[in-house]
Length: 288
Ligand SMILES: [Zn+2]
Image (tube, rainbow, N blue to C red; front, side, top):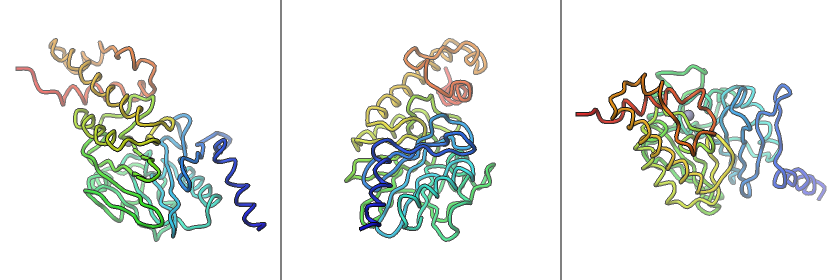
């Protein structure tokens, strides 16, 4: 009984308030319970040592983690938070895509686990691996379902943020862990993206009608966040096209670009806007 009450005591503050995790005196992420045995580590500001969100799901025989943060410090902190919540071992890591802010800390994960990724994500990471991440040990190009006390679906819905984005879907709990297919309140990174395909891919995620969406960056949301982000992608493509149709070059478009009003306050403009404009500009059909 004593053990049980301790477990309850440890779990209560999590569901009620979230739990801030500090690294070197700074809040790196906040552990939030999104369903029974399903938690997200939400980064308040995308800055070192943790830039993107992660999540973990307690299965019957172990824990499945989705993304491993950028740094080993952040991965270590995440693993110790997991062990605070459950004594089950971490058995699987799903990397939603190859970007360093999602994979960099993965050498901290136990040697024996399988690391899942889309086959294109593994190839992308093999070619460019600035954070020294471990390469995925298991790849897929379609879907995969875990049946381990609960159903967890790993899916690929088409090109989007990259050419190898996986999402994680819990149908019973209606929780979608979207990786960087969904940014909430940020303009997103498009430099490896396929903007018009991305909007179509988001349409497939909207069809799932998730009640809870854990985005790659930003706060936990619901299906509306996906709809808003898809509208933003459409609006952004139209905005860039206007400059191209006027005959401006890529660099002239960057110099003159005005973000559509609805998105002026969104974050990451300093880091990503220029690359996003150029990527979309070059993917638009050439004028005749
Ligand atoms: Zn990314």
